[in-house]
Image 1 (cartoon, rainbow, N blue to C red):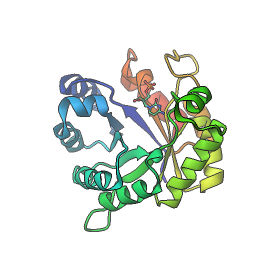
Image 2: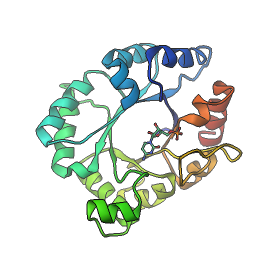
Image 3: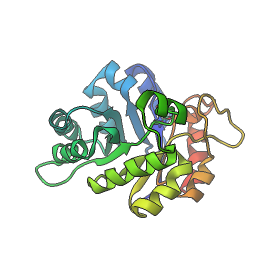
Length: 234
Ligand code: C5P
């Protein structure tokens, strides 16, 4: 599995997104990009098709979580968009994840990579205990959810780069770890709490890093992207 840098296109309109992508027009390596709820809800499936037609690989980050039948049918629609990766919440149970895989699988047997969100990195031990009544240590919960996702046949999980090594130990080297929370050593951290550099994420064993503001808000986004690729992919 090739390591890659995924740019989070956290913009609220087609215009801003395409203006950003236009900067990469001359690049030999077309960036792998992530479309999240903000852009998808603003522009709908048309923006996915348009970015795909420009030759980018796409991670559609919509984090589905509903009853198995609904998720299965929604995934069948998403697989028609020809994205390369999409995701759901592992908290929806193994039955929901299995149904999602079924829905996502195209008639020819191919399907986008399906990745599970374990516990969001915004959830603390305290909130998990008090709001969700989950009283185990957070890292154990993350590993358990990852194991459930692997058992259901999913391709990997979204997790902190700091958890990537443990996830690989538990679920195998081929089970993918897709990791946000990446910052340059000399960059701003913003609202992310547990961060690592692209080089450190590579060392720990992340398969894909998801990088938003360090690239999108950079003075020179193309240079920032190249720096991420140089550090992470080599
Ligand atoms: O700007 P920044 O690099 O922090 O962007 C990280 C991206 O990864 C955002 O799109 C954010 O929603 C996403 N993400 C995250 N933590 C998670 C799951 C997704 O930061 N646990």
